[in-house]
Image 1 (tube, rainbow over the protein chains, first blue to last red):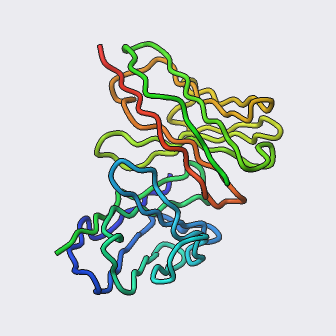
Image 2: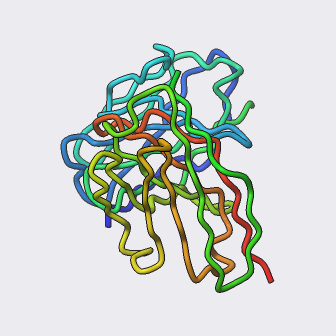
Length: 108
Length: 117
């Protein structure tokens, strides 16, 4: 099973700042089958990025993904108030499809 | 528009079974795979399994094999996830998720299952 470890656990930033979230896999993620989700309290996760770097329909262009192999990054170029939430990475290249433990992005 | 509408919250006693439904609309149900993912309180999301809504083929996580059954009713455009031998650790929000060629693009609203004596 591929274990995904996200860092940091909590990130405190102000609106307008740049956020960099990391996701590290215990084994190489095949074909860059790596996705990023945003989850707000009481809501289902929302897909932001798939295939490591492709933006999902409706995902603002301030969100970008990069990386390959075992190291992946989600970058939010300029934080908006609605971006403060929990972010999860997921690998779906190797069953069981696993998720990271999440990074909470909070307002500083 | 695509919608996945799940059944309501359930409270079960340990050892019982629960069956959660996920009614799809706004797209051709049989041309997609549907996954089931759960989230226990304070825990990370956990993938449980999937069903090919067209041919009924399924695959589940080894963690749940023997306890989880994923089915679908094509006449009702509905997928189901049944989990048996419930224990307190199964208390979680359960989600159905559409898979559009390895893009998990639409999620149901979630169904809270509480297991308590």
